[in-house]
Amino acid sequence: MLNSAILIKVKQRLNKLASNDYDNIEAWQITEAFNKGQVDWCRRNLHGMNTKQEGDEQSTRRIDDLQVLLTPLNLKMVDKQTYFETVNFPTDYLQWKRLSLKAKSDCCDAKTMVVYLGEMANVDELLRDKNKQPSFEWGETFATLSNNQVQVYTNNLFDVAEASLYYYRQPRYIQIAGVTNPYTNLTPTVDTTSEFKDDLVELFIDEAVKILAGDIESMNQYQRMTQTVESNN
Image (cartoon, rainbow, N blue to C red; front, top):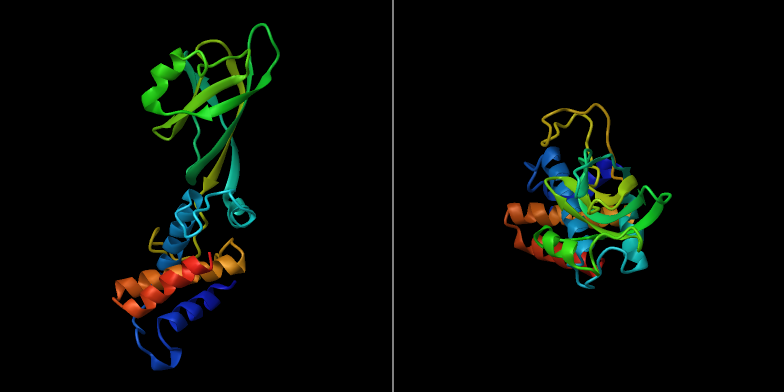
């Protein structure tokens, strides 16, 4: 969908176009509300905080809607003795999905490991628990996430040969040529359109209208758009 269509649709839902009310809402405010709205929608639906209580991959609709954000990244890791830690981490990271790992030891060739995401508070217990501690023989280990780095625990039993992080990234922000980007304070020379399907863009428009309606204390439009977003989710 073109950005010009988004601007028209937002203004139409805030008030009738012919009335010229709220003409002081500028294009950068609409793009900011749209970009915020799509991030809010993604976080809500990844977590399942919607009317259907569906999180990511819990239905074909969630898979269809969110697959565009699912991104792989080959990780570079260094040995910290008890664990291997990444030296690269995605700057557009939004939410963890899974970690694909191949490990190797002196006695055996590289093998695929099953990696569970553990809690940093429970690391000591996980390393001591016979059923949960890293095991090259059983092909299982756990990882933690802290300080924008991934730690894969090995207990000095094996080395990490390959590691790939699959994660949901931040959605791409739309930009309008000639309109100053409020996030970077730069003025783009070309449009950046939404990467989502048009039916989802329609929901993001409603999200943007909801945000703007709340900002200008237009409760009728706010309540209507809140209901519309969830009923069409």
